[in-house]
Image 1 (cartoon, rainbow, N blue to C red):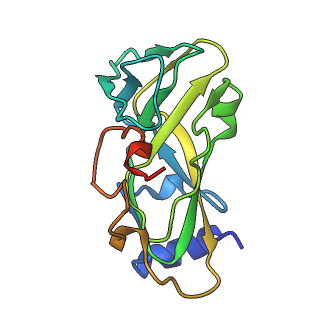
Image 2: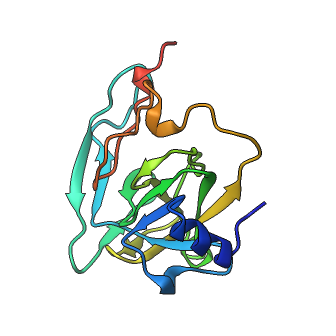
Length: 178
């Protein structure tokens, strides 16, 4: 079950959903709009290794925007910091973003109950497109959870994306045992 706008507001008031900064104008019928932060990152190497720490280069989006090119994975970040304690947050691209040929996540659109951070975006484009810091980029949708949560994400000892950040975070796959 997806939460409605009224239910999202109730959960914010109850402290079960935190969105900072919060702007009432960003609340949709059953979602909340999030915006592209001012930092992007790209991987230093063209060939990535799942067993190695793949380093990134961070860059700041200038006022005039930046052109994203096909064939490169860009890591972005949301302006909004969120916390979710009783619901599963999903991040989807806005339809206007999709119509520009921008995908904002490769596979990681779902958060976990207890996720407390900004959202790293896995941005790819089908053709060159100029983007700007602060532009609407996605929307958070909240799903109700059936049953109690044993261990929220923010209390897991092995959670890899718990450090609060304003910059995109590279893959931490290399921390897994395989």
